[in-house]
Amino acid sequence: MNMLHKVEHGSIFPREDGKIIDEHFGALHSKHDGFSLAHMLAPAAWREPAQVADFDEVVIVVRGVLAVEAEGEHLEVAPGETCLVERGTRVTYSNASQGEECEYWSLCMPAFRPERTKIDVL
Image 1 (cartoon, helix red, strand yellow):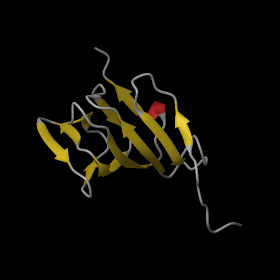
Image 2: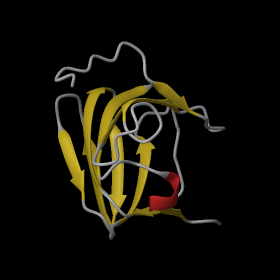
Image 3: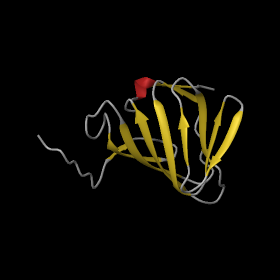
Image 4: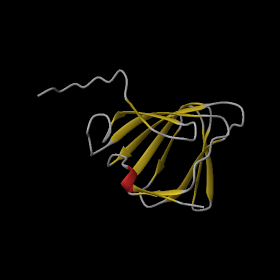
């Protein structure tokens, strides 16, 4: 049994909004279900619809500023900062910048799976 697992390149979740999700650990790439870890690149002015997830999510911003809106609260998460969004929270993520990419990591427990996320359809 291997005790160490190095990932040089993950698996890309297909998207149509310009955001890149490169999963290093999780249901898609490593078949882990207890957690997932993904490297995210959100283009300038990117925004996704509100969603409610059946997992806890921690975001760790590396570059740029990630806007997080939930339950009437608005936070901006800057490089070196983290934010926990607890499962069952209706949340909207967006890039706070109109001109720069936002780079961050997302840790989900249990692992992100599309069926664990309910996205608002407008």
